[in-house]
Image (tube, rainbow, N blue to C red; front, top):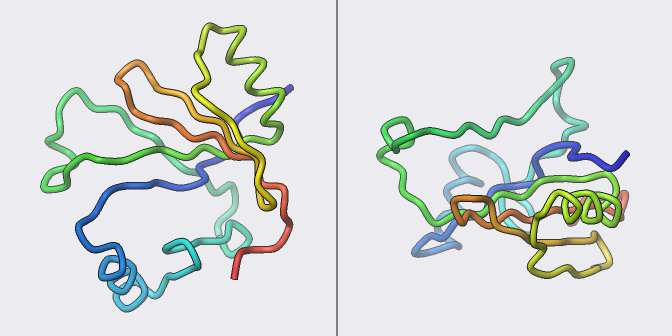
Length: 125
């Protein structure tokens, strides 16, 4: 059965993307062609997981602010899109790229969700 398999990324708006990427590279030691990148294969813990938490207010995330999108990895994009459409979810668009297949939707609060099926085995360089 098609299912979500993990968190593919978090995307948000910043004033100076290059400065932010430099901070992640310089301060946290993570970088990649599209921004900070982590390979699950490098996770040393057993049963690694990602978490999406929902809060009634922004107390926990302050002083952070909004402007983000959630990317969820899926194992079978076509199958998962069929499944969520049957559940009444409106899919905004979809596209196939050389490195993955994508589809977009909105959650009940209007947060954009990107579904991603990775099709390339190698990490982007």
